[in-house]
Structures are given as structure tokens and as C-alpha cells.
Amino acid sequence: MRGKIAPSVMCVDFMRLAEALKDFAALGIEYLHVDIMDGCFVPNYTLGPDFCRALKEHSRIPLDIHLMITQPERKLDWFPFGEGDYVSVHYEATPHPIRALQAVRARGGKAMLALNPATPVGVLENCLDDLDGVLLMTVNPGYAGQKLIPRTLDKIAETRAFLDARGFARVEIEVDGNVSFENALKMREKGADIFVAGTSSIFHKGGSLADNTEKLRKAIR
Ligand code: DX5
Ligand code: ZN
Image 1 (cartoon, rainbow, N blue to C red):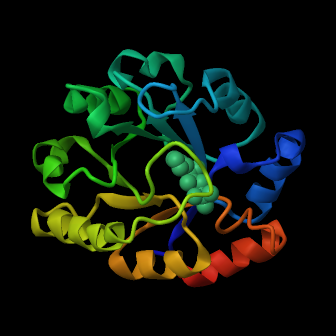
Image 2: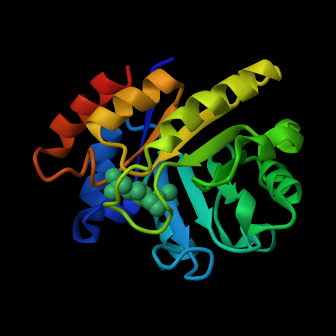
């Protein structure tokens, strides 16, 4: 299975959002990565539920909603998602990660547990039956344009080995943060399946969206 691309919609030129959605569809983009930030779990605000509703209305590409918010299990109903959409909740953001993952699945969503760079892979141990994916932050969450935390490359391989050793080869790994063309190649080699593409790759100023997407596709083949 080829690597999948999830453009970080917070990096889109909002004045051209409708065209960008059409471009994504034409380029065979697999997910729309929507960063939701509450200014508490991470030191920034970005997009919200109404923005997700607008995406649902104007695009058929599944959403990949990245909830960087506290107590996500209490707020899932604020967001429009269902069959085929990924929703990631941060392990560090709730005392009840399993309840949150189960609530995502109860609505037909694919449940993903997000780990900050410093969070050990071992926290997955007791959540395995309730998750469809793991989102590994390769930068400290909150802003686009940051630099990769090098240690997180090995964490991708560690996570892949951890899942496979326990019979969870079906669980996908998504990487989020400074997924540059060079980093994407290494991340793919380490076992990543879904790539959050932002200013380091498909929105890179050095090329067009189409050329940058093609370049990223080659790196994550
Ligand atoms: C980080 C954000 C992503 C991503 C953006 O919190 O979730 O949107 O970093 O892509 P880059 O890092 O390439 O600008
Ligand atoms: Zn994200």
C-alpha cells in the first residue's frame, strides 16, 4: 500500500480554500488533516467545528481531525465526522483515552491516538483494541514551520515494531510535523503510513502544489 498524504489544512491559503479542495481531489489526496487547537492543550488557536462542517460540505475527501484539545471525549459531538473519517485524540489530553477512542468508533469514525514527542510508545499497551491508528508528533504540536525532533524518527520504527509484535499490523501510523521531502523518505523507511503535509512539503514555496505533491508521492512510495 502506498503512503497516504494528508495536507495540513491550516497551511492552506484560506482565500483560495475552494480551489485548494478541488486541487486536492484532482491530485488523489487521501485525507484532509484538520488541526484543532484550544489554546490550552497547545499554545495556539486554529480551526474549529464550523470549519470542519464547511470542509464536509465542499469536499468528499475524508477528514483527519487532529484534536489538540483537553478532555476531547466531552467535545466529540461538536465535530462533524463519521464513516471513513479519522479522529485523533491526544493521550496526554485526557484521563480517559479509551473512552475517547470508543466514542469516536461509536460514531463510525476511525479512532487514532496521538502521542507528543516525549510520550513513550508503551502507553499504547492498554489501548490497542480500541485504536485504528497512532499519530506520532514529530514536532511539538501547535505551529506549522517547526523543525523535526530527530529522536522521533526512531520512535516511528519503535511504534511499528511494538504494534506488529502484539498482532496489530492493521494499525496505521501517521506522522505530523516537518514532513519535508527528505524527512518523509526516512519516515516511510521507519514505517509511517500517513503523512501530514504542510509548509515543509506540499505547501513549500519552492514549487507548485502539483509538483510538490508529486515529489512527496515519490518519497513515500
Ligand atoms: C503541527 C501541525 C501540522 C504541521 C504543519 O502542530 O499539526 O500542521 O506541523 O506542517 P509543517 O510542519 O510542514 O509546517
Ligand atoms: Zn496535526
